[in-house]
Image (cartoon, rainbow, N blue to C red; front, side, top):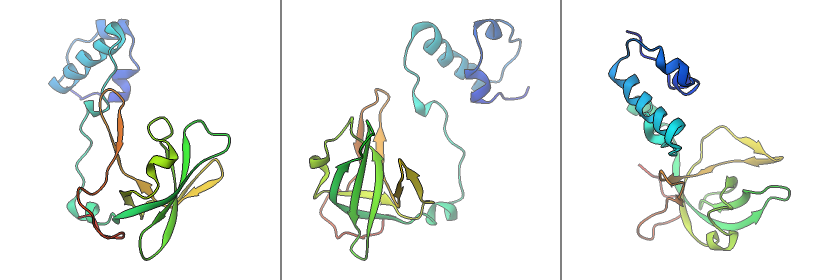
Length: 159
């Protein structure tokens, strides 16, 4: 039996499922979730599939640090994006983050959060994002930014 990809399964309709003759256990689990989503209308959790493991050395390549948000402003023309100016002690960077439905800009200013600094830079609505703030999202769509439990210097490495 060949395992099916999540994309294949999610693109199926009810007739496709009726013609499945053999599946591996993983695919059967996905099918149960698909039925909940399609038939019962239950929101599918994004954590349904565990992502592929990466080598430890690849993880160590990430430059994750604590940054303090100095400015948070709305991006004109966007319904969800904010531009953040973040101090890392040795430099300041800007980040573009889709947080407006979870936070007001003034709630973020002066607070410290975890950031990834060495992701490839991207432009959103013409503004370059030079780092990415880390956040967690639960199965109900609630989002919280990740920050240090105790006070620690900006620029501190996350290991």
